[in-house]
Length: 399
Image (cartoon, rainbow, N blue to C red; front, side, top):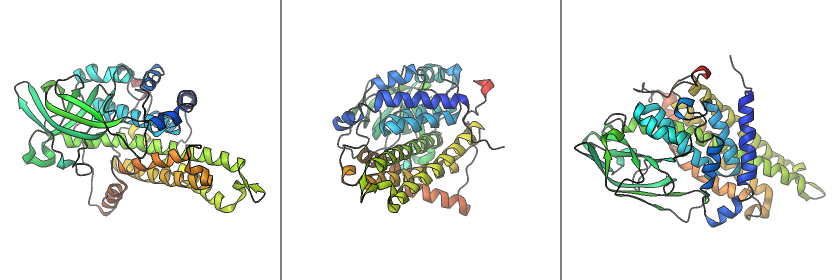
């Protein structure tokens, strides 16, 4: 049975996040974007609303809502700015949900619970200077030394690099096995030998913190190995399933923002004696945004439904991420075009939307990677094998 209605709880959640965005982000985002600053207090305010672990079970400090509730949070946050959706994507999608899926009970109590409560911030360290889409090319190593692992290496383009308390870090424990020799570790910022520094001069998402991580003989206890040795690649890919879901949901929010701004401007601006919304070529762009919004939202919520059922949905998540991010990029470009010369200045938010829309087309699997994945699924070259641990299905009685 298919049901496209939101529950009262989901509607309430959307209104809560929308009011938060209107009050806490919209009045300040232009200044934050110009300064390239990330307001850390946003995390505190999100935590006060229990939004840092919206889909984490209550027994681990979260709200216990379903996975589409996480999509709703990401939609509404990105309507304010991509930076704040990215923060939740990384903290909840890439880190916390990965701990929920793969962590031991001890790891969940130590790391997941404070993250779900918003007391600690989590991040994700996979990308390196010479390893993006080609994960097997990472150079970071983890060598066993008694009851510890010694980590050495570098990560780059890491969201929340200078802010997060906990990092999921991927490193080779046996390079001879290629991707089967990668393992995953929980690293704390306070561990000796760890350092970070910001990346400046970004095209977009300027109000978000992005940086590099450095590991200089960082001693990590064996208890902080996530999963088993050699399981890191599988853990990373399952984490990206969750991250891509939130990125796609955020893209829906960006399309919403572009549409809202463009409709408002279409009624305000007049040319040739009538509102520009009356011109058919402008209507064409508005229609394209609306189509992108509805198509992308359906793809995203289908993924959320599959997650709620406890079914693996790597194929569906890839499609949603690819399509939604492409539509968001197109919507932002159309929004600038509708605004004309004004769209080229930060007097209106659409120029920021366009700058922000490019990064999601690249990170967590480029557009090109996702097209290859979809073709290989259709051609029968790619199949998703069962994982040793799966993300828990959502059941109201269990939360």
